[in-house]
Amino acid sequence: MTETFSIIDWLIVASYLSLLIGMGWKYASHKSANVNDYFLGGNRMPYLVVAVSVIATTQSAATFLGGPDQGYRGNYTYLAANISAIIASVFIAKILIPRYYAIKATTVYELLDNRYGPVAMRAAGLMYLVGRLFASGARLYLAAIAVSMILFGDIAVISIIGASLILLTLGFTITFLGGIRSIIWTDLFQFCMYSFSAIAILYLLLDAIPLGLSEIIVSLRNTPEGINKLQLFNFDMDFADPYAMISVFSGLILLYIGSFGLDQDITQRVLTCKNDNEGARALIISVLIGIPLIWLFMTIGELLYIFYDRLDLMGAAASSVTDKAFQGEDITVFMFYILNELPSGLRGLVTVGVIAAAVSTINSGLNSMSSVLVQDFYRPLIERTTSKSERHYVIAGQYGMALVGLCLFLMSVLCYYWQRYSGLPLLDFALSVMVFAYSGLLGVYFTALFTKRGSTGSVIAALIAGFLVTLFGQGYIVDLLSMPDGLKGYAFTWQLCIGTLISFIICVMGKKNV
Image (tube, rainbow, N blue to C red; front, side, top):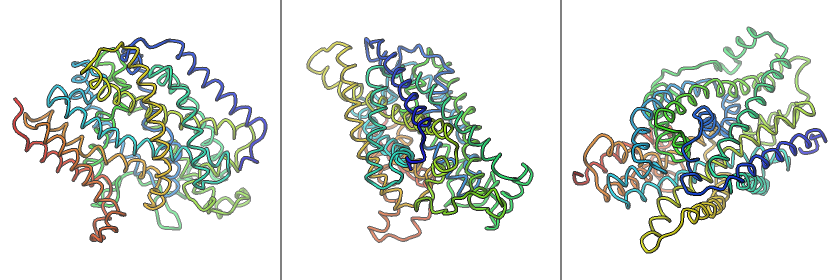
């Protein structure tokens, strides 16, 4: 669909990329003297900027494409998940963040080193790496969908591969020399770009739909399919809906505790603040600011439903494009609108927003995974036999990002087939892959925080059990092993509850740690 891009569009995109790379080089000029500077910004980052960086990391491409996809397909029940996010962020602010700052942690898994020893710490770090590889690979895949449509006009596998490589190259260029400081400040820029893009699209959609606000509300509440697309809360005992209230007050709270408190991708940003109070403040502010942003993207999807599916309401204003297949993929509806309906100039500006969301996704994964590789694995191994300068470990972190980038690329290609097999909406898919690591980590950390039990052996067994419980809950494994089909009907939130419970039971079986 690149033929829909004008010279103005390309100039806007090129200017943005030049500015972004320039920002990366600006912060690269500040050579990181040690790993604290490279991975934690010397604990000097302003908490408001950190809060925005957390938003950019947790939402980014998953929200930019997944939010409209969720609104187009369904209703607002995903928005209710923010109740879980608020509860989880308060728990983390009161319980976890003070402990991380107390031990001056570079990675959150150092907490387990103090309790169970280095082997348990590395086991948790390894589980994080596996889980983050899944989650960041999935988000890279979502971002590649957008870039693939812009550059190649489709989302065939070869196009996804090309788009993934382009995004990784851009993210690596920005992150390589500047470290976390470069990422956080560019995240602020990225956040402003994709937020402005979303507001512009919302305005254009409201202007294009020939209905008043009250008429739009009525149309969404009473659709021909008999669906209330404005539904916010689902109080049914629905174990298949991950956003039913029964999941909001159970599995989703666990999901957000894992995401905000046990995932180095997010907590690394929180640990760049001056102290635990500012870190806690940054986390809670990020959750609160994120709520209207999620609403914004979901509302775009709701309006796209009227724009494309309710031609009876659009009348003469109906889009000239009536093929709702969107190149055979419902998941591309938002990008389809951007490339076919937006005027020249604005199309380029919104595309910049898409790329901004994508780069935020990549940067966070590269730096956080590299920090765990260096601090929890490479550094302890080297220091057994020799002493190296801090600069040596900074360089090791840069090489670690190259390795991580390669792994993320391979995972994004796998996710191309995984998401199509599962048939999950984009947001559901992005969230569900995170469960693989979080089940075991939650069981282990709850043991460490609230009991005096557990051992290195039980930590390792609990982490493995959490992963396996999630794995055997996947539809393709159920089919492969000819297990009862009923096992496929449970939402990922319940897989997380079951996995966490089993992991906790296994972990507390270890000998008492005194």
